[in-house]
Structures are given as structure tokens and as C-alpha cells.
Amino acid sequence: MTKLIRFNKPFDVLPQFTDRGTQGTPRRTLSDFIEMPGVYPAGRLDRDSEGLMLLTDDGALQARITDPKHKMPKTYWVQVEGEPDQSAIEALCSGLMLKDGPTKPAQAKRIAEPDIIWPRTPPIRVRKSVPDSWISLTIHEGRNRQVRRMTAAVGHPTLRLIRYRIGNWTLDGLDTGTWQTVTSPTHTDRRQR
Image (cartoon, rainbow, N blue to C red; front, side, top):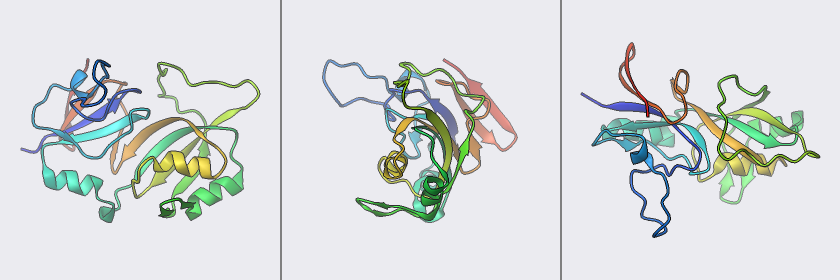
């Protein structure tokens, strides 16, 4: 039976099970939270990003989740510097030219801070003279640091990035640092640390 896990990755956690990085600098990895052998991440989520990761032991499912040709949408809640106006939102929706080429059109809108947001450790840097706001951004591709580069391209650097949805899977009911096996559309088994 295929194993599939939803995990709410905290800030400052590497999206892998081992750290082959800097010697002597203990960095948290997925193994600090998930104790299930044989599962691997279906995609990445940068160390400085938070939110939904899917892990599975099924290579075909992993490919379906990560390969852009399957057009599986990914929705991010993005806290940005400043207050994007309608032209910034329209630019995100139309597609932007980044250094590695144009992005595909996205869905973007301003939102209130989501109710299920947890405190981040450490908190974001707040500047009294510059307001911040939240947007919801849904993309169908997944280039390196794409969301951060897109918000910067419209003049609103990302302060905090939370992936809320991948396809039909969401963060709903999943606290930061917790995971849940998904065994069927109607049955789940919750694991917490």
C-alpha cells in the first residue's frame, strides 16, 4: 500500500532527512520530526519557508506531484513588505519575466492574515515605517525560489512564505511540526512531535 504523508514543515528545517552541509552546525531536518522509513519528499520547500510538504514511498506518485507537466497547483500564503496595489496583483497573474525566463500566469489576490497562522521562531523583521500584508499566490510550476522572486519583481519582497496547498492536500488541521499519514480519502492517522 502506498504511503503518503502530509507534513507542516516549520521554519529553519531542511527539506531532507540528512544534513550533509556545514560540519559542526546542527541543522534540523525532516528526521527530527518524521520517523517513517522509506518515504521521500515529493518536491522541496526551502529551509526558510514553512508549510505543507508531501512525502511518499511511491515514485510514480512523487513524479505526479512534482512534475510541472501534471499542472498540480501549489498555493502559498505570502507575507510581503508593503501593500501590493492592483497593478502588482495583475502582474503576478499575467506572468513575469524573471532571470531564468517568464513565469506562467498565476492566481494572486490580497488576503487577510490567515486564521491558522502560527507564531514563527524567530519572528520576521518588522519595520515600523513599512507596512506588511498578505497575498495568496497559486502557481503551476516550481522553479527555485520562484514565489520570492515573483513578489520581489513586483516590488514587494517576501517576509514569510507558507505553502498552504498542493493539489487537493492542504495544511488544514495540521499544526506546525506535525505530520499525518493519508491512507485513503476518508481515513487519516495523526502523528505529532
